[in-house]
Length: 259
Image (cartoon, rainbow, N blue to C red; front, side, top):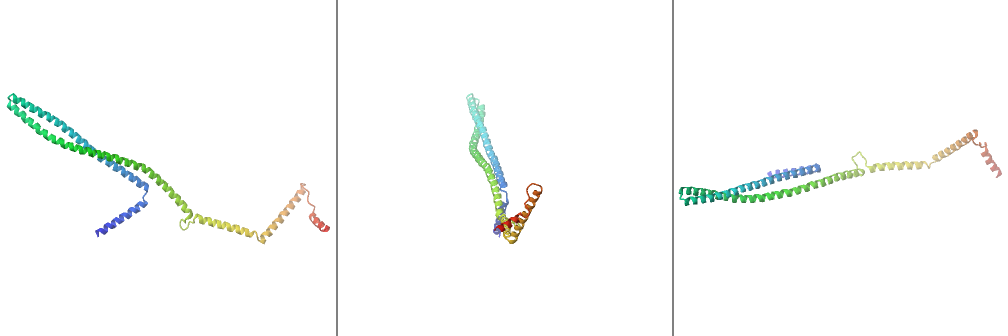
């Protein structure tokens, strides 16, 4: 039962993660990744600083122990010389005291020598750790810089992708139906062309009927009568000679008579 619940939990997590990735803004996710990388670099630098600080502190402790060792060695030698001089002078009590002092210096000298050896080992390990920490920070700094440079490239590609998607959507809307109540561009064009062609066909058919010919004759007669009336008006105004009444008929009759 527990295994089943775990599997269900992992499935739900994967499903929600996939759905989130579908709707999430890649630009925001990219910025989040860069911020996380910068935080990791900051934490790495802090850890490296602690390692380097430990190396520096060990180095200072070693230097102090070396200085103490050198002083104890000199004091022990001085105590031995002074005890020897007292012994030569027959001052046994002073010789004993100086010998005890030399012994104390020798004991302390041995302890400090052990401390120096231990600090040398610690300093060596701390130095190696410090070098690795510096190398890690430097390497991560290069990686971070590469990511910052790549971020600009990815943002540019993202903008280009968005623009291309908008172009694809615009082009698709010209040939695909957008909803149930919105016709496509091609459908509207076909409808207009069909209506226009039908109008042209109807006009052409009407131009070939008897009625259209009759209208054409009537219009020509009216144009002829209007021209004749204009000629009479010009003649009355003295602009041109008016044609003799019945001249056309006389010519026709004369022609008939002659023939």
